Image 1 (tube, rainbow, N blue to C red):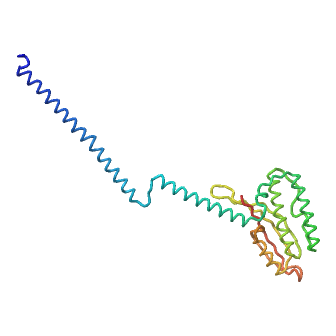
Image 2 (image 1 turned 45 degrees about the vertical axis):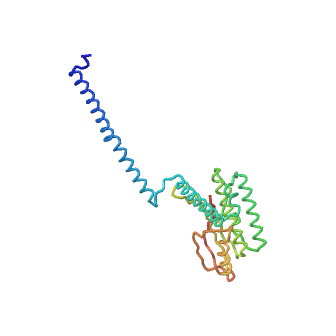
Image 3 (image 1 turned 90 degrees about the vertical axis):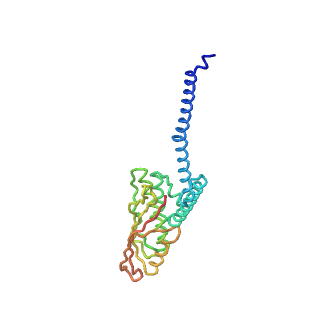
Length: 253
């Protein structure tokens, strides 16, 4: 028992207790200094950022806000797509645009159609007593590939459309008509938007027929875009004008 009352032993135990207390205090201080305070500062900084974002009218990172923006953009895209479809339907030359656009023909189909269209237009011109001098319509039967067949068929459709249009307007004489190479129009990304199928035409007309011809090429389902036009004196009193022009049939993708 005297051993536990030894002053040296008591001093040693007190020193250990004091040392432990000092370690605990130092640990608490370090925790507050290096953990609690930085976390509090970070929390305050984050709160400040959130408050600034909440006050900003230009930023909204909420899911609902992002969904609203996405829905609005989708609606705009749909409206623009519908508007483009209406414009394409209004400006296309061919009433059966989708059928013409997806033509799948072979060499025999083309030759049969070429012959049939030539004969029909010849008969129509005879009934109207309008000379159709280029009876072959500027198209031959020689073809080399599937792509060439499709292009030739579309050129034939454009020539047929324009020949019908001029004959229906009671022109005096169709002197010349033949197709030119197609002209493609692409957007900035290289996607094909629409194709022109130009047709060279020369005919004898009077002033009234010139006016009705101009008017007719702007009517729905028979739109032709003028690439160039030249008007000269005609060969006779009844046909006092000779029209030379290149008009393009438009086919949208």
